[in-house]
Structures are given as C-alpha cells and as structure tokens.
Length: 123
Image 1: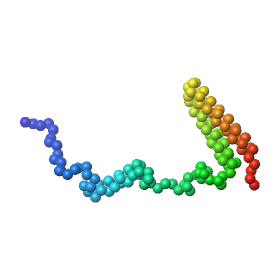
Image 2: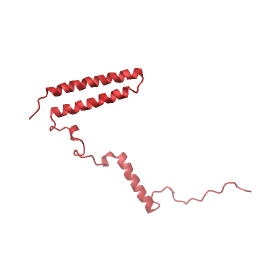
Image 3: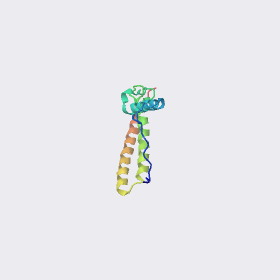
C-alpha cells in the first residue's frame, strides 16, 4: 500500500528541548537567564546613580526658588502649547474639554510667572 506522507523522524530518547545538549545551547540558556533576570528580578539590577539623573528633579537644596519657578513656568508653557495642538485634532465635545484644561494650565503659568516676578534674586 502506498503512503502519501513519510513516517515521522525517529527522535532520540533524551529531551530534545534540554538546554544542555551542547555548549552552544548552554550559552544560549545562560543568556536567556540573564535576560529574564534583567526584566523580572529588579533587585538584581544596578540602580542608577544620582549623577545619572537630572539633578533638578532630585531633592536638592542647591536650587533656589527662582530657578524652580522658572522651570515650572517653562513646563507649564510647553504643556499649554501641547494641549492647544492636541485640541485642534479633536471633535467639538472633546475639544472644549481639552481647551478648558489648556486654559487652566495657562492660568497656572501666569500665576507662576507672577510668583517669579515677586521673588527677589539672591546676589
């Protein structure tokens, strides 16, 4: 009798998915373990040193009120601009909401600017 498909290949008695079949598979398994530890074991990772981050956003008494207010004013101005650009892409109902949020951000920017004007520079 003719069989249209051949017999399946004979598999070895050992587990074909064993990570220790050869030296290359051992290296591959070690690399996989390192990758899993990197993503799933945060305690094993080395945390960033404070010098790697922007020091303005760390609790640092070196920055005076004027510098912090100036930075906040710039951030609020950027947020207001992004909200206005985003509102232009929305339909009427959502546009009003986004423009309302943009107006609150703009008012906050004005308040921070006024506080910045009231700060006496240290010389």
